Length: 358
Image (tube, rainbow, N blue to C red; front, side, top):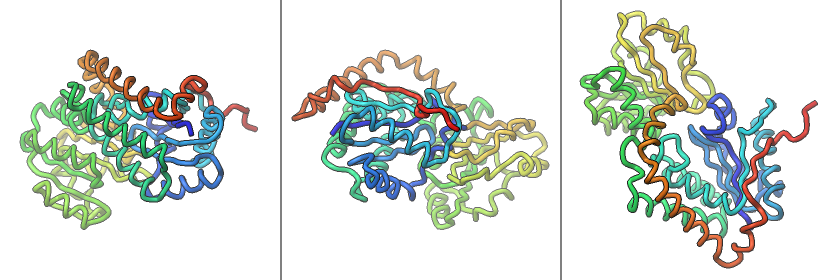
């Protein structure tokens, strides 16, 4: 069974589009089951992060047709009716396997070589595995991807410098405040990336952390781990007079902070700068707040400019990584019957809305 990848990421679609296609973890098992019951896939994994939404599938028949059907399923599932051109891609073998390996290694990430994506990919795979939505084909592919990621970490310097959302956010904060010494940080939503960002800020001198989460127990645990304190989710706005930096990642389906609300919250700040780092998809913070004086809002797409600087410094390491990935993907595909799938199905990128809408 050939492996097909369809999806969209920070390179092909802005956050305004990506957030429309995001999957909550709770929806993933039933979505994979539905795709299997409709005969779209035999095996599947859904990866949904702030920078990408992708479906990895082992399919029967022609991968090009399978990719078209999966893209149509994705747009229908999320009730997306706007016209798309190149935002969604469909990839067949051998490039689908290379793509998986690149994603695992952080080579397809906004922040080149970042490490968070490997954990996110493992989590997505484990979720599909636990619900019996993977089989021999994807199990071998993902295990090989994890091994290749480990090899690249040990044999190259691709991760040197700012290689995570957390480290880029810290660099951004230092540009705004000059120093993070004694800065007060609030984490709204106790996700993995927020935790890493908070730890990175503490490591650069931030004074303390306030954690607010819908699950107060989780907020207490994280607050204790970070040497800070937890507050109930409904009380986070009351702390704004003291806060310098807010990291928001709640996964709420709507804005948790909009311009009218923030205007009220910053009245007593007397012009002190406020940095808002919105790493949620869908976004937590209304972009309109950027119009307020001394408020600096950055979402995951805004981090791209800093990431681009890291990219320029890593060109030689990229070549080493790509050579490893090409070699390992060819070896994977040559095992057993995989070789016969090499030539017929090249990279396919197409407009999923092939027929005009009424």
